[in-house]
Amino acid sequence: MRVLVTGATGFVGGHLVPALLSAGHDVSVLVRDRGGYDGPDAVTIFEGDLLRPGSFDAALDDVEAAYYLVHSMRAGPDYVERDRRAATNFAAAAEDAGVERVLYLGGLGEDCDRLSAHLESRREVERILADAEFALTSLRAAMIVGDGSAGFELVRQLAVRLPVMVTPQWVDTPCQPIAIDDAVTYLVGVLDVPELAGRTVDIGGPEVMSYKQVMARTAEIVTGWRPVIVPVPALTPKLSSRLVTLVTDVPRSVAHPLLLGVKNAVVVRDDSVREFLPIELTPFETAVRRAVDGTTVTCRPKPAAAGER
Image (cartoon, rainbow, N blue to C red; front, side, top):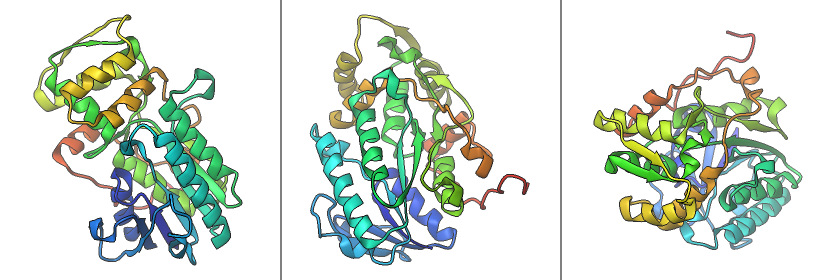
């Protein structure tokens, strides 16, 4: 299948492209700077900017399916507007080009829980893409564990650098992290499942944990000891995000919206995707060890469909 990947220079896109090639797809990528892309030689590279309509139309020619993995959070506080414009421009161009399917990686979280600005922006992009004429498959995930993941890097640095942490109550919020290997396996696998075209699916790892457990177990794997974590109700996520920038290397433009989002429970509510892709999920501790070691097994064999195992 002829497939286009946007956001190919990002964390997920960097893992997805070689996995798609291994699955036998004809892969092209859309990047803003051709010289800054160092992906596999087998891909076709197109240069363009989703914020400039008309600059990326050639990348969509003859494309059967496109992955939308674009996020502007690192660009600064206006990321919501930038993401809105980019999604609108992409949807219009993909419609004009006759793209049949688009696959989008969004965020978990229930609308009724008053999503944070970051998660609501992810949901707004999803709605913009869903309103287009192509069939959208939206995969919603919580924190993705892997080397290069901003969310995991934030957790790892906090857990390792602070043997004693005073945190807001958000440390008790439940989340369901997923290994990058599993997220990519799902992203590749849905291409072969026409029943998932036009659907939204939740993806997650095998364990639901609190953020406190995530940080404690990460620190134990990396350092051999568990930090002392003391929740303080008076410490808000907004205040803690300012403190985090003093402790971690994660840019404030990224850390701030991520931490404001931890008030929302991000767990799988509908696991029906596993009826079609019953992959063997990676345990959290295994995912952390691979992230710390910089290893990955994203190019795994195609999972057996239900009834084929």
